Amino acid sequence: GAGVSQSPSNKVTEKGKDVELRCDPISGHTALYWYRQSLGQGLEFLIYFQGNSAPDKSGLPSDRFSAERTGGSVSTLTIQRTQQEDSAVYLCASSSGLKLTDTQYFGPGTRLTVL
Amino acid sequence: AQKVTQAQTEISVVEKEDVTLDCVYETRDTTYYLFWYKQPPSGELVFLIRRNSFDEQNEISGRYSWNFQKSTSSFNFTITASQVVDSAVYFCALSESAGGTSYGKLTFGQGTILTVHP
Image: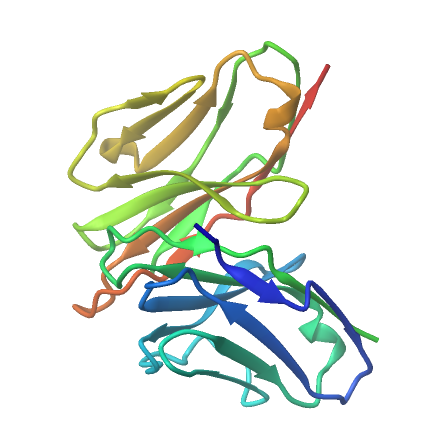
């Protein structure tokens, strides 16, 4: 079946603009995760969803970052007033549940470049 | 706090050589899972293996094998008879219950870049 998809694959924006990154999880997967991969910080957890609820937002780097999920499916990560340090690859993953045994399957990522 | 260390930043081998990627982890939990993911040049993280903290049996899958040792908090990954297609970044990751609230947040190591030359 179809895997996790993300759009756009690449996004170049100017400092100060807002951007929206989209994630379509594997059909039927109730858990969804966002991670960020940057040269300086490696792979870091941002936020997760169980259904449409995000119980833990502590990984979001600042209040310029927000995320939502609708219909227990598509999720959008929004970055307001982008800064150059936001440049990174944003990865989305989904899993069938939240148990530690539930493997996360990753999408191809969105490469964000802030000029 | 949980931590995963992959001390080898880059490894370069010639095809058909065996190569071992090291992973050392820190956790206070008794229940946790360890993972290896492969990130080829295309960028997508590919799941390779999951291991729980109660199962120290080594595992072999084709040319891949994993050695889990709780005594040294290590979960090393060996590729036998490496091939050019094995060239990628390999990540070790840890998932643990967080203060009794279990969810699958992954803590990743910094990754090891493996280059296999023909």
